[in-house]
Length: 294
Length: 253
Figure 1 (cartoon, chains in turn cyan, green):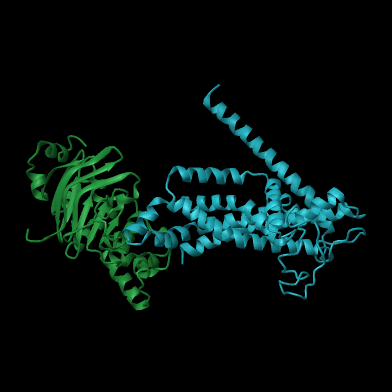
Figure 2 (figure 1 turned 90 degrees about the vertical axis):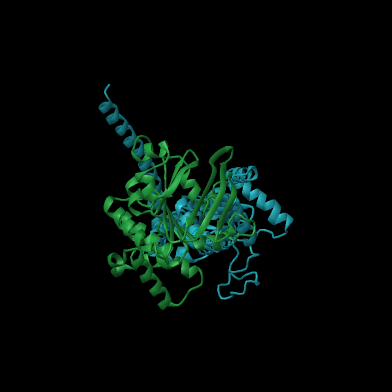
């Protein structure tokens, strides 16, 4: 067989494999969207769930998902930024640093249900936070930190060494070089990483079942005092998220329209995650353009 | 040769781990002169250049011994402020490394971070530096476009303007034209000749013709040591050592 023939066969095989992956993804997405989208309505998106009758919505679950996401990101972004900057710019190549890197790698492949049980034991039981938004947000932080740290570290390391040399040789201190040269250049990557992380957190269920809880008590959307238990902002209330809701109605739902609610909620979840991914690209390119041609 | 020496170095050794890259180099650099460091690849000339603003500090395992003084002050003394040192000794690298910002922002970057906020001062510094780097006419109408959109030669001159804007005393250049086409190289060379009156310039180059065209003095490095240093004319017309003669006549290297 000559090289040309082999090349043709290899190209063909790779195309087929790529095609199979696209088909699987398109099929999965199409199935969820086709089944779910017809159930989505303004009523479905805004009204509370019903446990026994048909016609329940996902309003509170949707709000909970976003609120938990915001809290989890507020906690995890500063920590992972610090860790990522340290690992990429300051840590060097010591043995301890290698251990830290390995630990982060292991943590990032930890099954989320284990993170959930850890959160249950530590935050719910030990710290007596109960099934609450704050327990859930902390569990999500544990789940998100390694991945976010890794992605920030990678984005920073993508910045060419010559840029650091340029900064330092201009008489910038190391910190100034990091803040004013390296981070601006890595910013699009960092932001994409954050938004993708947000998508992952938004769809997470297993880490939340035992931390944020499986119930969504009625909320008083007129009360924005975070210290009132029925306030949407209260961090101490239990909060079932969209992903947990889907899991729960499929596991033990007794509503007559359980499968319809589940299909609709799944479609909403997928759409939001897709939006996050789409946004990650758009925001990334936009910021890069903004930075490079001021 | 009445100019006083701005940088002096005595018995400089540089080690990367166990490897001795520079083996006892002593050389002085007079003010307002262009000194060219030449020699075959791997002879240590870039390594030596990068000790003068302590950029070798960034290399893990690098160690420097000997005395290197800027205006009589030991730059490897524990009390030396490396950031201050690098403000006085600027550097241009082999690959143009503009920041991914606009041309204007690139040039005034050092000044801004030094706390200069006044728009008029920044504008003036930007124009002066770009003119000194001989690129003002080419970019004056697109100062707010990205520096990454320029050609390699233009980028290198913007980088030079960025160094000039902070007004260092010494400018180190590490093969600044090796990634550029001949026309851009000539422009950079002309720029350097014009800057000689105000700055002390030390340039590492692989290009013999470049060294002979622009430098006042030339030092020939070989295997981590200086074989010969002297006025450029003498080095090229009447070298004292056989290795020097062999190298500049192209017999090796």
